[in-house]
Length: 243
Image (cartoon, rainbow, N blue to C red; front, side):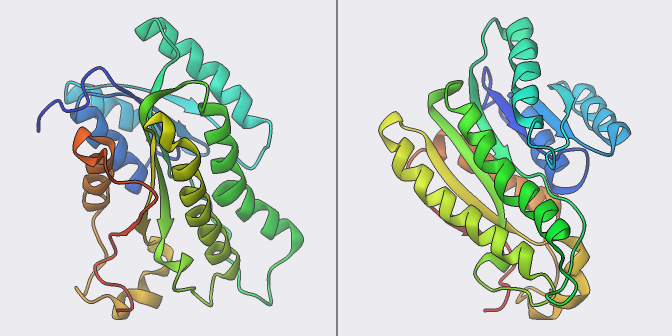
């Protein structure tokens, strides 16, 4: 792969495993200095950083429990320090909101606490992460929110999750309008949660779930110069879910 993102900086939330890890590795392989966040799996984050560095890339990991509303300002203080030490600047070029959490609940089993926990990570955190990033985000930068087909084709087993992802799609459109004058693009990429594999795999036209690298490839395109004319879009990389 080329170095299309050489000299760029990126923040990928929830990148200790799965799709987040694949995105972090891909952006780093394309030349970006990648900051990745983790919550429960410090070892997974360290393994991701080690894999990136072994491949010749640059990355570092920061802890952030995004259920806690105080986590975002602390995260950006640490991010500023790291980027300043490494690059002499706090500038951020690429923001990928990918973090998620467990706690899938059906309508009858939902509680105020489970609602708050899910919405905090899937909806509140991305909003305030973008807000905190705005003063740091370079003109011509990229915001990529990892959404889900559940945002437009709700999963009855996960109504709160479906609502949160619908909110992310709406936020993406709003950001595209708000930030367009600065040349900053905002797009959402659809993915599916592996916890729902058995429930939805039969509805996928291509007959399988996508690999993390396949989602990462879409993110890499949006982050690159080739994606500069794409904004306000929800790009479904779901193998044809519920066509």
